[in-house]
Image (cartoon, rainbow, N blue to C red; front, side, top):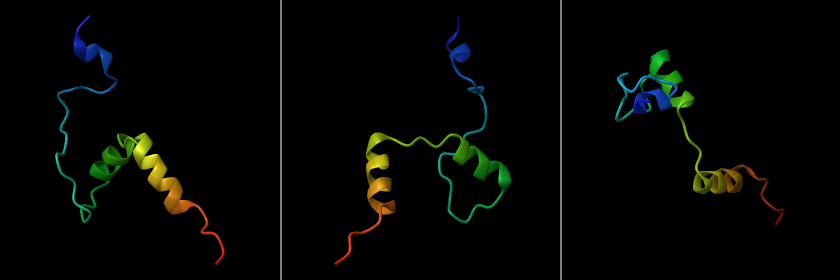
Length: 56
């Protein structure tokens, strides 16, 4: 078995090192969202941000 057989996508594909917020081409947007990884730390921050704030 070769290491590239362990991955769903080809390792030789084009990978953007930096994606800017103003990039609007559909392929770049799709790839970024498709490969986005939510870590435990990000999940914690997302939950805090999206949870309703307690009344004053």
